[in-house]
Image 1 (cartoon, rainbow, N blue to C red):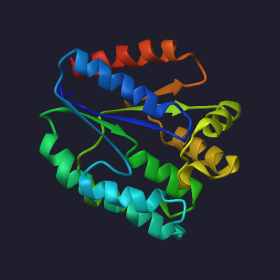
Image 2 (spheres, helix red, strand yellow):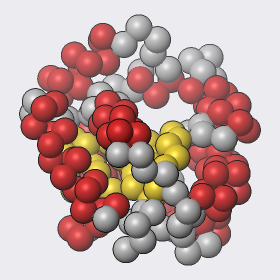
Image 3 (tube, one colour):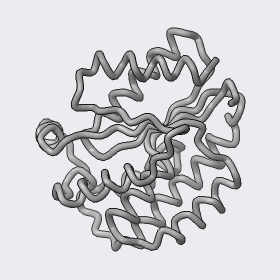
Length: 203
């Protein structure tokens, strides 16, 4: 594995994903590592503009439009961020290709072949080196979403949808390239577990 891997954090809303990304961000800064971090949807300037459209609570796109906007955001990130930093910096991504499969296929029912074909077209053989999949139980998911002050469109689905998406993520997992992080456990426990793996990945 390259000492500048692509590391992805996946998971449904309220799964602790972004909290763990921020912990890794601080850790890599402390170690003076060359890295770049971005989120999806969003990331590059144009991708952030697309993010605002996708997540706006007033937006009411059909599922196909939602998918194409997500992939449009990714296309911008691949050209503006990933290709410029690939194997030059550690790349940390808050949601990536597995999210599209989990949400748009398992959650919304879009043909997985279409999603995979467009992802392959955009990525052109660039793939994540390792993925942390964050999982959360129903109780904590509901509690965490209730605490959010500014909810976007993807924070307002019902639990049945999130459950389908999380089960979809678990179907995607491949043992060698994934670690499941139980975010129902204390943050201190998960922090040690994640940072230990990060050290192994960036040696």
